[in-house]
Length: 384
Image (cartoon, rainbow, N blue to C red; front, side, top):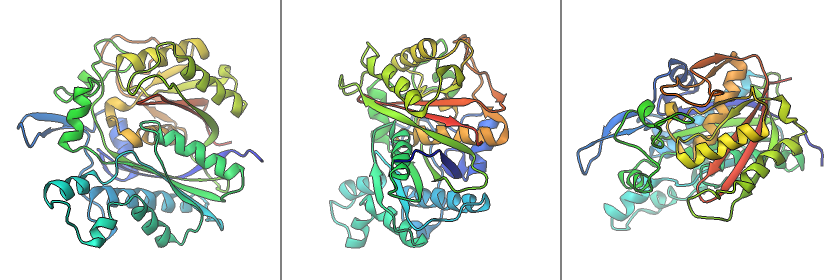
């Protein structure tokens, strides 16, 4: 096996800020959250959420999910082409999903009593948007869905690198999609005590700051072209590690044994010294247990001057697309010399970034903690 640095060669994004990579970037740099006060159709109460607005090409599917997945992937592929990438013979596809086509499934059981035409039923299958994308571009590498809760994006990046290192593919198109903000799904996260819908995002979600109550829910579809063959990659994915707590369906093991070991393994397998890590791009949902876990990672593994940030106060928690949108922030930040961290609003950790911060390189560790015990860490570097 030949280990190679995987370049993030193209980026596409659909988010609560709108359709397209530049809408995401402009929204982040503005420091204004993507969430808006929507109306709960049952209670009539306002619900703060970063919902992807209607849009996209109707030819890409009948739902926002299908259209967003195709739009993000298409934007990433086109972007990579402008940066010198040309597809190899075996282009694989990885799609990170936890809850797919929730609006269609909801309609199937509530409005149509389980009755659908066959072609509409096929649209519910996770293979369908993948097949249509592969067909559009004539890609013939493996196509697979990756699901590791909120760590799905990191898991897919690590899988893509293993495909490349073992010669399974020449390139990978990776998409992470989560457009699951039906009223039922949002209510369950509120009942779990982790989501906040009754307060503006910067007031509710304050990772590593006093007074944080949890996260505001969000949606996104984010795509990357991953390859070793590009003139101008945004960033390099050096590799990473994954583990599982095997402790509880929602809670983190309070001993933090496997989270800490996962981050250390990510550094070891990529040949990265902890002393060289400049940024911890945290999972950072603003919950007490995640803040505690990642503060321990920051303080026990990395140097005293390693900065920490989380963009969830701005993007919302995008579930299976969470770590992907957060990787995109670091990759775009390397390219543009600016890290669009949210403004701080309360006393917090002394290493927490406060607002957009100029950067000139340095290693980033992207941690992601998926509900149910999924630990992951990816090591990112500026292009050589």
